[in-house]
Image: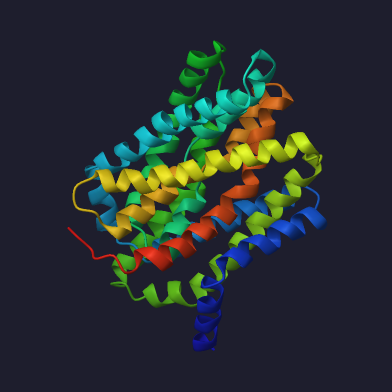
Length: 323
């Protein structure tokens, strides 16, 4: 039975684009109503994905990364410095003029929000540096309650208040607790459960991510009215989204001693965002037009992650490692 599940996991792993695309399309065609139950399902799915990914990771490696966070800081410079600048410039090019101020602000907000938790899962599936990804997600969420209000005041001159306690509690239960638990189990069993991540754990994680994508697609489907302006907006958001993955790729080559694991984590860490948080911020503090780019960016996040995994599999696997 384990061998059969291993084969299923391998089968799905080679077809992640469809694993992502199918629940996305089903979410648009047959959405479920956004209720507390489905929110809990999405949260538990995130939590399980973090736990399963961390079973393949040593706690000692995580603490080592945490004690020397310069790589994570380098990623944060791109996440909160380079990408917002790129998003704002692209906004000025395609949406100039004061009448498009809210659309540009939506681009900016979408590029400023913290790293997406699913970057941990994608890094694990594609062979990234999981301790680096987890440290970056943790540090980014810790500094975001301070950084986001400052950034928005700097750009739009408007002060906002972020619910820091709930944000940190969400991180604690979705990332910190399952992540540390998985790493402790890894070290205690001397990696005995690594096979689990390649069979049952990997297979069930892919089921979990399809649930998350389906629930998110169901939530945003009613917000989209298809017309020319939406098509143009989708194309511009695609450019910004691809720029994030490209910056992650380039940022890894600037560093001395190119390593594939590090490159994978940087690509997903800089390319993926916590769009759910961005949507909450946009709807809470700004007009609906600001929320539209953040909402539409959810359409690209997982499909681009899947396409990136195929590109990495095709082109990066043959590159020699250097230390």
